[in-house]
Image 1 (cartoon, one colour):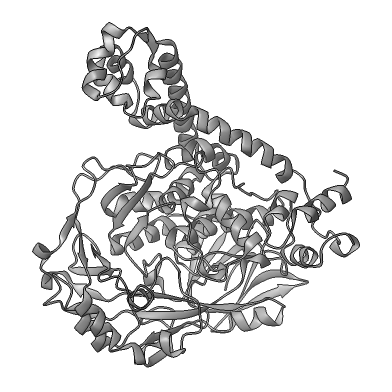
Image 2: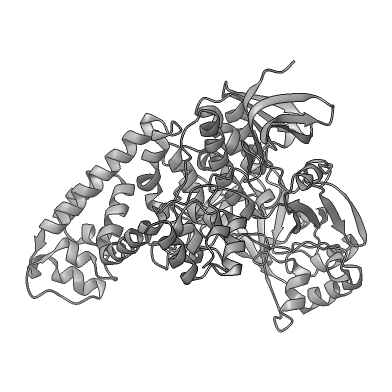
Length: 620
């Protein structure tokens, strides 16, 4: 009935979709197995993509040739660039999405890829052959063979939903949990744990009074995620902000005795940076209000997502408290919020390719690795799909360094440090964030994506053109000087010091008060120059000119660290033979199995003296 596939991807969430699309685009035959064909790429939580650091990840996915940026651009209803008051390393794109269109667009992309087949069923077991994954057995008892398997099970592995004192099995509301995989992996020697996440109630937007809320419109000139020719928004829908109050908090407290979180029924650890509303009012009792973001779920629906009100309290308590929020006095609830517990596998059991140490050609991606967020899941799926394809074709692993991408930071953190709570990406996690900006993801990664067969030639040509334009703008700005007579009047108007002698445009641009477009408005020569170039190239050149000393300093740090990254450790290195290692260091190294000295240095519990011993032992 079934052919043998190159790659089977289990789960069709954000990780599974990117994994399937990547492997198939690169030439592998792919079977995407999902419990429900109608929930492919479902936005289970809030209908949005991007945000602080997450937006950088979406742009990196796009730069490599992934699909999340394209899907986001085609289905967004609002776009905002966050943190524009800060430096460009902090600028982060975010969009509000149409939940239905997002899933529909992803399904179209997958169905239009001739190398992707689908099967609606539940994977119950991984088929093994001499320590290698070689397919799956489904709940119908069907065996499907493959050369590699990628698990992207999300919250479905032994998922348990909690609403007040009620709990029932499920991976998402209305969908059953997946069993069998965890139990099998434990018998193979894997370690597992439990995590928790939650979601807020959904309400009827027609029942809300927006006059009592603060409007949050999109950007006046919206940008986009993808470096391809997707179109920016011509119209947008607003989001809204309101706040809880003491009355809301008191009503929520009446349900604490029935709270599964406070009663101990929930054992899993939830996301630190996205706590439930009951957790917020319990931990921050001194706060008399908390922000609520009111987010529309699409162009043509009245359903509204109540961001900031995630809860697993009894539904009657949720409803009563919700109606005390300004603007929600007559709110009608579509469904209550709930918490969900699920199995995950500590990611220290993975290689940097996301292949497991214990079973060859078995890859984990997404929430199974202890992460939270669509973007974190999607980038893991992309990398797992790439490496599954490369494995079955006997090609070298594709790994991104911490200095090359936020994706590299995320995977390196996971495999070397592990996580005991849902991992979320922040700009602060990246030591080279001046280099890893959202504006230059294409310059950093598109050539790599092209070399592995994922990004197409159009993308490569576009990035080469951008690099050439940036170099031309920088050269002209460095060599063109203005006299005091030409620019002083404009400088006075801007509110910055006037010139006493001829000064280059590049030197003027280093002033924090001056932007490249202000120079353009002040001088016809600059205006004529910039008319020849695209906005992306102009912005890139401005950042490079304005922050060149910071960029250069960070690149020197990267060069220094790369010396350690390039010192490889053989896969089956015998750490027990190195008697000078500390006991803790030896145990951590044996468990994590780093592939380079640089990775070893970032493992918690491995000391600098352990690294010195290792370097001496391998002849360095």
